Image (cartoon, rainbow over all chains, first blue to last red; front, side, top):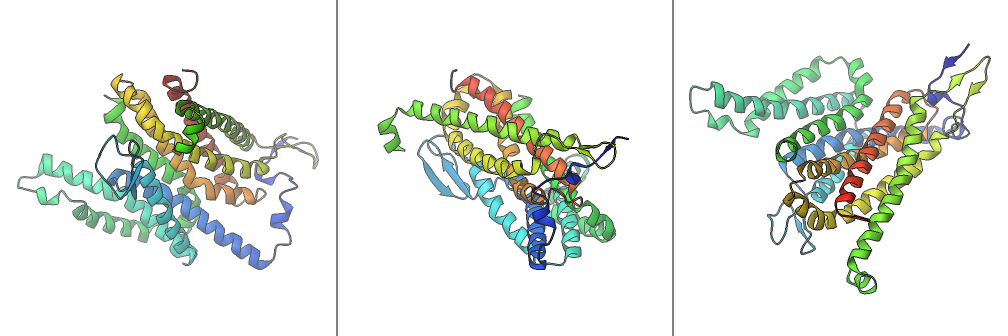
Length: 201
Length: 165
């Protein structure tokens, strides 16, 4: 006679105020905030990972001097700190993406999310693939291929193809799953980048 | 900063800050762990309509978790300045590379948790909604993991050069 219930289905004095008798405008605002917060949660880890990997900090902090410089600056007196810069760049750009997400139709948002996430995987993969090709396979001087902009071409095409062929229902169903896939994927990439400098030293 | 350092010694100031950081960390750890444990162990429906409710009002923990997480991130960001010059450099010289690497990873883990906070807040505004039940559960667990990782690594680094070391 004992069944399990999802925790979300529990009785709670807090629940009713949000779900029963809410005016339509409140529901719409809540839905907009939902779109905003979920998109922010997907965009932020992707952008943070990209900025960290490309080392694009909005600011550089020099702790010894107590000086903040705009964009990436080399070490002066003492070590430079970039982490603040990646965060301060990722927050406003993810906010812009999240705000834009509240303005577009839901089906485009789902497809756009698939496209961006596919691109986030395919772009660095294409670049890594090109570098392997240049070193191990190319029989001519293929150094011109060693560029992130050359890698962008197959990555954009492949991401567009994937987005086109992913069924709308699947894109909708997995949309909130990106909330976990994006930060975990980002941490795998960032963790891998720490192996050589620290863990395998 | 100079005004503060004219009242108390610089190292005393940083140790007080680090200790407050620790206290908040314990509070955050308790709140998010209880919440994560509760979402992982669903309530049971006993005979009839009676539902065996857990002792933790999970939804009411969300504002506390968000507030403490942001406070911790701000305090950690401040203490990070001291860490970079006073702790990390000797750590590298003594070849504590695993500790430095773990702390580097902690920065990224904390950032990923920050990105999830708005969604976490949103999901817990509607704790009875079944639409987001699954993702709410795993976002909460992910946040708990980030807090635990940050706590453990922070503690290890503190033991190298911090309060009581």
